[in-house]
Length: 151
Picture 1 (tube, helix red, strand yellow):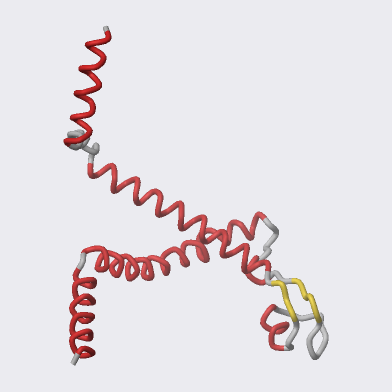
Picture 2: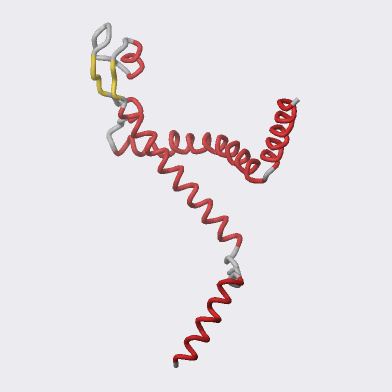
């Protein structure tokens, strides 16, 4: 019987957790983020990387790699996938460079979106200062009385 009550209580706590705004906001953010990733991938692949490749002499970073240990058959390998298929141990530094560029572009786009949304909201109203707790107010009053006495 105690197990059934614990299960019921846990289910209620779970429903309360899911119903909170933060959990729903997080879920919406993850879904929008996944969809937004496709846009960012297209911007990077179709708009950013071609000029970068032009500047770097046509280098495609995602295909850059260094063979650490030959596979079977031994290299040279025509592509990163061919090296991996042969069982070679490769350092795919080009994928890292591409992922870093994607991150920086994504961070820049998110920065501009947040900046735009904040400007639409207008200036943030200052919150009034909360009064100090009663014990702090009492101590301040005693301090002020002692100062007045000593002056």
